[in-house]
Length: 120
Image (cartoon, rainbow, N blue to C red; front, side, top):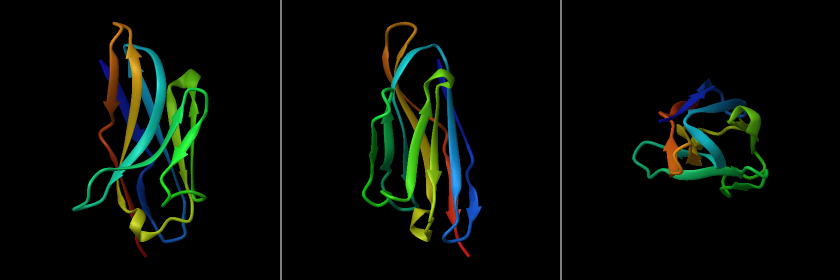
């Protein structure tokens, strides 16, 4: 069993900032990638950003220059610093981890999601 627990969502005004965190726990041998996706009402889930265990980051074009993903490998935790937030960033943000379990399984796990709302 692997659990991903997100925190840090909320309501902010346009131009504001938020920092999301996601901690992975359970039967984890190693995590080779972690990331964030988001899903707005009526839209498909989309990639926001990912980061490998070596620190290589990948961003959606819509968030480049505004969002920064980072991770603490020792804590199995990934962060998403979101600046210059706009109403179109409103969505449920989901954490994901691609990992090898203690049982040798290659898994992709998802968190429950955290709501981010940008509104004045």
